[in-house]
Image (cartoon, rainbow, N blue to C red; front, side, top):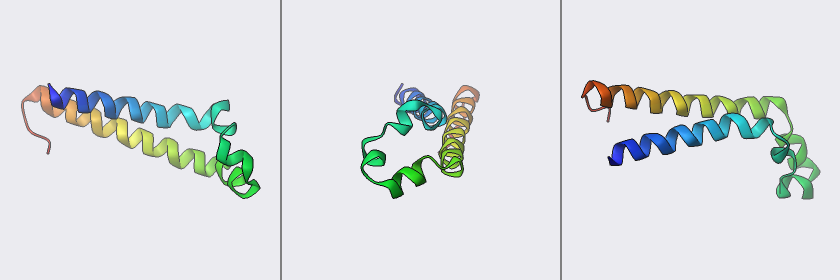
Length: 76
């Protein structure tokens, strides 16, 4: 049960990292609004893509762990 909870959290975190960098919430960040340098970095498409890539890796790792759990193996 604990492992399923961890997998669910990892999938949710991965989906959050995939979606949020491309939303308007990302651009209305408090830290990005107080510093023009941070604003330039945060709104850079390469940075957004890198964060989206981390989210995709997180989701894939969670799905691999789920598949290993379903097959009955330990993926630790």
